[in-house]
Image 1 (cartoon, one colour):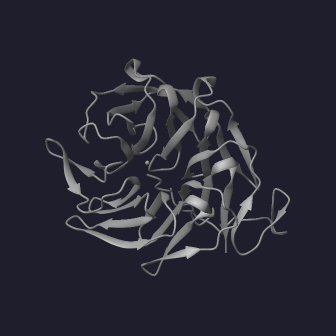
Image 2 (tube, rainbow, N blue to C red):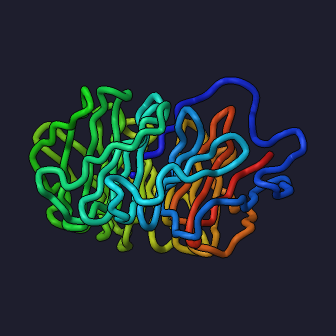
Length: 315
């Protein structure tokens, strides 16, 4: 599941002059901010207009001005199917999300319109991961389910042309997928990572990991980060895997961009990549965090999780 943020310009618009968000006084560092839901939030991405989070019951939230607001409470098609993964187009203008019972939807960030593309080709299995590649209006979409099936699609003119299903992981349950400029990576729950190749997919590790992988983030074609249920973060440089840090709790999400990085997990665990070193951050919550997204010049880093918790980083 990739969270490549479209870099915005302008001064940092973190809070109003009074230093408040939703009526809550903010302090330096990570703050828990008001969100209009108690539903578990499972993923968050950064768009051109700020962060978008998705979760239980099909809820889709967005930060609008100084408040988080519900874009839809019932997901694509008002079916109330839970949403577990999201990704954003390279220009930050469209967000795709997937989840239970074949749920797939697309949010036009500019108009706020949600379009339902659920049950593609009649598939109603629950999706576990999602990747989007390209600019809005001509993006490629890749959805993976718990059976290890990958369904590719091409969006254009308001419709999606779905391709043939494949099984890159050989049927192992897929935990996450990310695609960057045509090069895709998949992580499975058995400790395997797979990369697109000329004739399909090839295994690229992780030898000796022996743990369930939970998320991955592709920086470029040969720089990949993955997280594990043991709290590990591994880095792949195109040839070898390196264990770079181990947190005290399981990690569920990671986002990387250039020299920046953010990871989150169980017990409110938050790690940040600073000066090439992963550092543990003080967190205001003990709720499990399921998703995280790096900020931009105009929006702060964000992490989301159980019980509708939303954290934002204020400098």
